[in-house]
Length: 451
Image 1 (cartoon, rainbow, N blue to C red):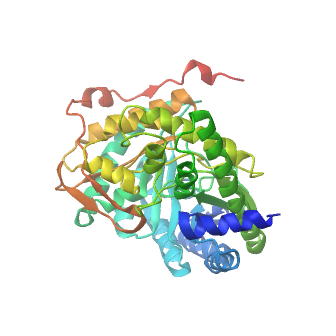
Image 2 (cartoon, rainbow, N blue to C red):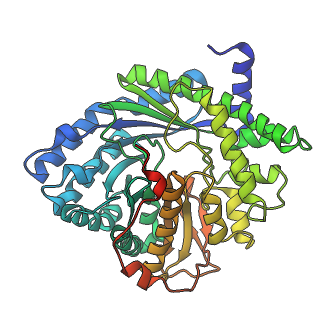
Image 3 (cartoon, rainbow, N blue to C red):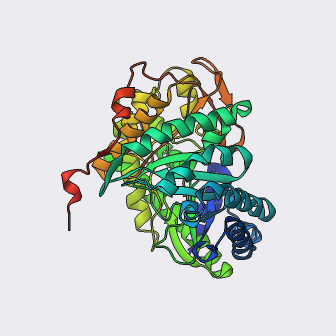
């Protein structure tokens, strides 16, 4: 139970420090929806999501009122659609449209799971499915897509990575009138997890229960505020402050998650400890790093500070929840963090520095706008670099970049809302097309053999 002081602290965090439940995400298995035709499967998918998630939004809104904690997003994740449409992959967009229609009618913010898992090999039906992603993301509003191209156990599928560079480019082209907005809803993973509540990468893993509730809590402003009271503390003591703060934040998430699961007749899945920023001032991961003593995020020392932050958040959160999962760490999306946006505008942060930071945080090169004429092979190479980091380090990494059509370095893209805005960052001018063109599989590292 919460003590009186804890309740008062939580109220203060909400009112002054941007504490919120970033998302309550319901995971729904769609395996029972497989039928003999695409049309029948799509209709069964729509009916099942409507039935299972019917009360998700009103329940979340009721919990927010009762506990006084904002719940920003109400989301659904589903079984990877490529598994449902294996017999008719070219008609997968029918299922995508059905999911988007259900999300709109239920008032769900985003629905994730137009996904494929091709980390060790890519069957013909999976390639056909992946090639439908640009069309689907251009024609839907709330549907999100992800593709897992590698893992620490299987290696990195370079054939899939080569294809995904092309898919990202085509998705941007099909949503050119919105600065490539479709790419904001597309993530390429290594070591994707089955219980991620955050978009655009959420999907409901086949190892999960029929219906689960996963919650993502976010409080960058709370952590920054706590650190402001110890401006001269050494880093050991600063880490302790972060741990204690993460414990309090996660306790709020555990409370909401368990109660939501109970009311919705679903299983409580996990609480994701990730610090997820927004473009609002006072809600920035970058500003936490600057509170630790960096003049600007991106300068030397940024990776070390981020490593400490990520570790302390996990240590504090694990003690506060019976079930921790998802991605759990600190996100560094450029367009969604006001501190990152300003550092990028000032030329203080680069794609190369962001890549170094991804070695120690969640999740990867995230919401980065790059020139629209960036070759598909260069995007594939960026994905390959991140996948290699994830594979070797046994962590989840991802790429969500937006090659904004018609934009060049010095321009800016505007997506609005939580997706924010971002200056166009330069990419390296070298050519990796021959390397990407080799294809094949980068073998798993030796430490993958742990049986």
